[in-house]
Amino acid sequence: MKKYLNLFDFSQEVNYRTEILSGLTVALALVPEAIAFALIAGLSPLTGLYAAFVLGLVTSVLGGRPGMISGATGAVAVVIVSLVADYGVEYVFATVILAGLLQVTAGVFRLGKFMRLVPHPVIFGFVNGLAIIIFMSQLAQFKTPEGDWMQGPALWTFSGLVLLTMAIIWGLPRLSKAVPASLVAILVIFGLVLALDIPTRSIGDIASISGGFPPFHIPELPWTLETLRIIFPYAAIVAGVGLIESLLTLNIVDEITETRGRGNKEAVAQGAGNILSGLFSGMGGCAMIGQSLINTSNGARARLSGIVASLMLLVFVVYGSGLIERVPMAALTGLMIMVALGTFEWASLRTFRRMPKSDVLVMVLVTLVTVFLHNLALAVLVGVIISALVFAWDNAKRIRARKHIDSEGVKHYEIYGPLFFGSTTLFNEKFDVMGDPEEIVIDFRESRVVDMSAIEALNKLTERYERVGKKVHLKHLSRDCRRLLKDADDIIEINVLEDPTYKVLTDKI
Image 1 (tube, helix red, strand yellow):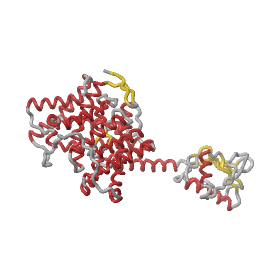
Image 2 (cartoon, rainbow, N blue to C red):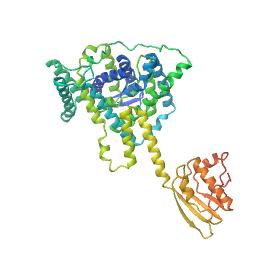
Image 3 (tube, rainbow, N blue to C red):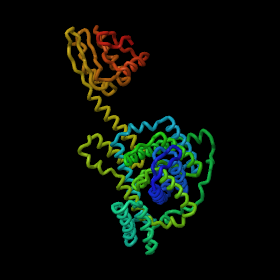
């Protein structure tokens, strides 16, 4: 069953049975998710299903992370809901196309590398928050169409089917991994409900998924600067949210599969998928961590599973809507709850006492922003900013100066730690301008001049010594430090004096 698949740029070992069955399972799980996200945005269910098909197919074929699943997502739905209410669906299609163009641009200019700046506590918080969102979204299935909680036989029936689904997904892999446990669970619950005529909610009770092939459609709206002014802010947010969620999901799948995806290639694929989604009546989207985890937990590692999932989703819409609409929601609810439990980083809770308090704060804050605001991009941005400020503060406290006077009466300051905007105050406090001898040497062997604030600090320090008739030499400046000083020549005047003994910079800047 294992062969090597060579198509486009990929050559990897493919277990066809695992990939096809996993793709079928993902397709079944995509249906209620795509419908729900479309309804959240105030759109027709078919716009969500079309987006899931187009994005899933394009990113599976062209993306930088085999095995990752993309489709309509809640993060995008939350962004465009006000656009739908104020301007209508045509503006959504145009927004999605523009967002795709922005994502392609980001990939072409290799901006995916900036995901390296996302610290691990931020990823933990993002994943935990997303797991909580997935779990909480399933609680809505325990409510009646009127919005009240189920009671009596309906509640016990639905809960029993959900627990049975979870038990099969948990227990079957311990007996056999020949077939994806999630697919077996769905089929078993489907069979029980049909055979015993159990009254319970199905996909068809949410919305109809019957439709045709996604129609090609150029957005019908005025192509003016005013239109661009309206859609550009939404497009920028959709593009940013989509890239952040997709690249973080890529990192998570990388850890699970112990392989390495290509972030910039994934950004281009996500953009191409959104462009086509907007042109084929889809609401747009990005990578879906829940479906990606379903896929990888089933053992899928290749592109084939995503291709099968998207094609089967189209088959469901065009030919199999009558059958798929009868799939019990209890089976899909149990599956998504197991995904939420598997997504949550339980190990992060055990490391609370061993992690720095700042990392714990970042992780908890990112989780809370994700859960309560449902804004994944904002959550990650907040986490990165706080982590950067904590890092700057910690490094600002680490600057040190070891002092001694040599036999010739020259005082040496040996600097340790980076000199940057956060450490300039402590740096200046290390020097005794009035009490120092006529000549001093500042040694940067264990330090670096990092930014303009550091250059300004050096400039002011040398000016203070110059006013009292004393000379300052800078020693062991690294090449990039000297370049930074040279680049600042037109802005400020830094006094670096020639001293062949100490091998300092020979030109007075």
